[in-house]
Image (cartoon, rainbow, N blue to C red; front, top):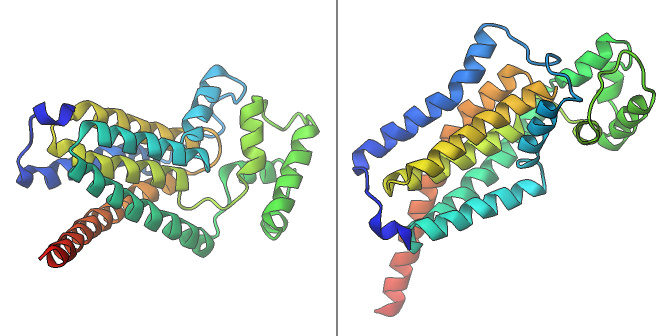
Length: 260
């Protein structure tokens, strides 16, 4: 097992390193928001770059996002001690579960349309109030119909991105994909930082930033959606880490009592 030889940071420096990591994740969407730069529809959606961004998005799209989390958890059990990996798994369950509930609640509260829906409305291809007044299945049917028209006002896109547009017809604020990626990355890095495994942290951080960019370039989210999701990730991660620690202590105490 590789964890036995990993150099460790002091426990006191870990919160600061996690905070710095979170601030780095916040930086791109913060700058885009403050400068009012909109990434959609800057990128041609029928390009290789757009398809690459689709595959980044794919790693956080249900149900395939669960495989991403499972792969990261498996890496934790390979790189960390069993006790640390178990706490990491508990923390992930709490933070990601909380993020899922929070994301759905906030989307309903803010009721913000997606950039691609706003784009189609500006081209007079749909009416936002009518579109979002329908069920999700009805919205998917309407988008699917629009994409078959080959209207000159529609952007050209790859088959993968067209399928994603047909599937992702929910509300925009906040970005659930970004919340998932940032929460997963920060939670795992809390445990990897302590064991001195820097490379997985850098890779996960890059993935989380790329996830935010993919959502904006593909017309799924505004910069404020990505910014809010990233901002919310640290509180969720904190709750997950503290909750996992408390659960671990409770289980250990119960085991000690039963053993006595």
